[in-house]
Amino acid sequence: MRMSVELPLWRALTAYRVLTMLYAVGLFVSSHDSYDRPGIAVAYFAVLCVWTVATLPRVQNATACTKRFLTADLVIALTGILLTPLVVSEQHIQDSGPTLPTIWTAGSVLAFAIKGGWRWAAFASTPVAAANLIERGHPARDTVHNVILVWVASIAIGYVVEVARASERTLARALEIEAATRERERLARDIHDSVLQVLAMVQRRGAVIGGEAAELGRMAGEQEVALRTLVSRGLVPVSRVSRDAAEGAVVVAVDENDDTQVADGPVDLRALLAPFAAARVNLAEPGAPVLLAPAAARELAAAVGAALDNVREHAGEQARAWILVEDEPDAVIVTVRDDGPGIAAGRLAQAEGEGRLGVAQSIRGRLRDLGGGAELVSTPGQGTEVELTVPKQRVERGKAGT
Image (tube, rainbow, N blue to C red; front, side, top):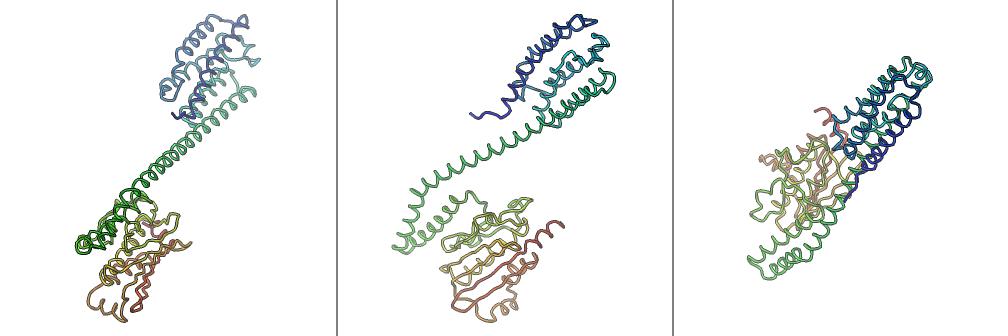
């Protein structure tokens, strides 16, 4: 059971209202001879006592302390202040004698502060200040001093309440994250002891048996890698699987037209690249988030998907690929490398002349639109390496201009 940080404040306010009510009544009893119209004062104190006692449940928490109650409570305080000149002598006012509710009035203002923060406190303090000046008849120094004191104190308490609420929300969120992390760790242990071991066994046995069992083993291996990624990272949204998945492809592509994949603010590129990890695709990335503008992150991930599609299509299904993500101060660099046969000299130019624009448009075109570039290095027999670079400043300026 979690205790709210506001609860002690409401309890203190409850005690304050009762004690200040008794204090106001005690002052009247001790000096009732100086009152010109004590009957009016007695009637007011009767209302004040009944109201204070009857509304004790109202100041137990923020839910019960409604706006209507706060308004009525403030009206009673203001009424007592404005009635003071009618029941006391002129000398009492000139001697800076207390008003009928005295310091009970501060309880009404503090209730506003605890309920709504410093803005509500400032709102409630203003009519109280005006009523005190009207009661005195002129802005005497001691009256102004008391008005400013109540004003500053109530606003300060309201601000402290807002900070306390924000801290409470932060703590609650941290506790939720901790609980979710522990639950994920528990599930990870259970999955590791059961599902992952079974998938690994199926992969090994399928490779030994061969035939259709080998294909089943290969699929089990890919699912093992995907499940390990899911357990270690949490659920990562995957837009769609490559159209060749049914034929054994392990590359996951990002849907370029899916605007729901990213938020309006910066997104973590790692979340978009995580689905690419598979049995033959190794992903290495920083431990901290790699933030990019949504459009830039989506295009960069799509370029990585296109590079992996080329690996699968031209290097063969048994080729391995490595993705390296580097978060530099002024740019994000993603390198895709494979151990395939490489690209013969002049092959890219020939493919572009034949109308095959996979590298020219799907990779280089995307990076060029982002103000970056794509460098392709390939040596026959030693694989291919594609380095994708997106400058951060260019992306931020482009985002600001949209």
